[in-house]
Length: 420
Image (cartoon, rainbow, N blue to C red; front, side, top):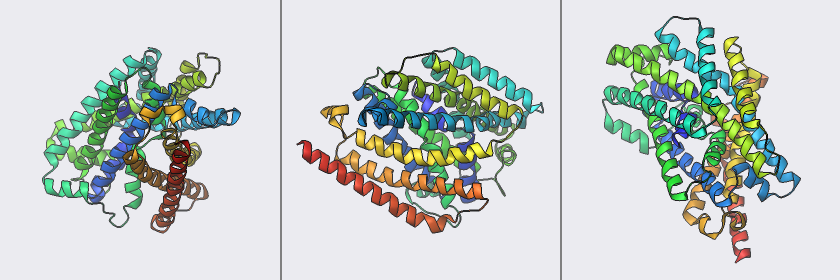
């Protein structure tokens, strides 16, 4: 079941970002993927552990942390942001799957889009979350094997790979791409998705599920970086397919085609699924009457994305707004989760964070604040038609993230002493 998390963050955006990193900087940005994989495990485990211990969804826990109408509104605002973001990016997910097929065969892209949308809709209509996640897990596993085969066959220098993993480096012009690798791995709606599917699980089995799923996703992303290293010139889907064919023959080209299709298709299903699970679980946890909003939510997300895809409309304003909202949501979620995991009234004393986990969350909050602020700056820049100089803003954003994390850690320490 937990492989759906891999399916959620390995989408067309991940393929594009990871392949661009490999084509442009070889192995030098692998460390960013290693860090983001470990941070993703930390946040996913925390969200699921909080939901299991507190017997509420992540949104419900936030509503409980801040009682009354304010907490409910905050929770619904966050879930609304997740749903809006899923709508904004769904067209990209579907078009990514279409791009994979279009490389292999010449056919009307609108017809392919419609077929993909219908198949995704049928999977979601099954209504059984476990069935859908098992199907997606099988597709992700197959995709992972394909990219791993490509990576092994084209990688010549393993020592250079190891150096890239353990030696953080930012070659000139790579800062935004490195943060992009982190941003495509740590996705806000994945925390709600993981919280929703953790219901009824034991914490031990949940931990293993999260660790395995996120590591598989991380390995797939790293394999894409390795597979893209031989690309000459700028990255494009066609250039990647040609490079794979040059190195591995038609087999390599077909593997990439399937991998790109699988990345787009699985994300096209998981985005509506995550939205639906978030809305339904929050209705239950905040005392709203449960209706048929599960099907209504996934249907709305899928149909809007499908229409954008069929008419080849790029919802640029919506995507810019989604970037800004997700930029705000990611650090807020990390901070809220950190506070929840140190609240013994919600978690019980046996499931609270220890010193080591709190230290790890300190680092993750700094990075998510940095990412969030940068995404907001990028969104504002795109809206105004200007570019943001990443090198100039990174130190200031990093310092602000550090101060925020420091203040929260002092608050947690004070509350812990007060309760004792």
